[in-house]
Length: 139
Image 1 (spheres, one colour):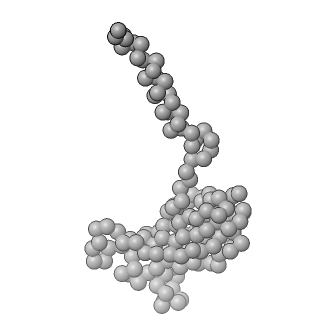
Image 2 (image 1 turned 45 degrees about the vertical axis):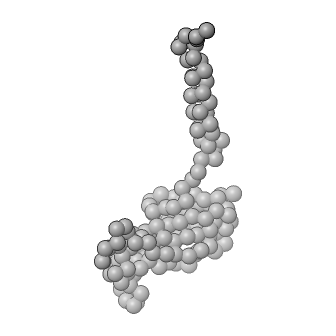
Image 3 (image 1 turned 90 degrees about the vertical axis):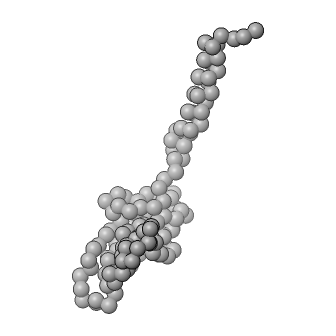
């Protein structure tokens, strides 16, 4: 006995509804994956204690400039893990890339991370650029 196509509709609707429910679980439970890489100093960084996060800033070392911390970190709140330079693809002579700075949220609270884009040997020159990121570390 063949079933009518209309009779299959409830089964299809059930599976579509179940799939949509499963896909929406992270938002329903508040466990949506938060971004871990930030590149906009106008946006506050929100991180959970014990989680790592990265700050990415455009850079071009062929000009002699590099990003440095402009002020000491509040190490009771965040810890510097390290930094690295990543070239843009495809790589061309003189083309830029990005400096990626990695941090760890250490304890609950708010702090800021300030950078300056400088030529290290020009000790009396003003930075070419400055950026400050506000960081909120929560439990």
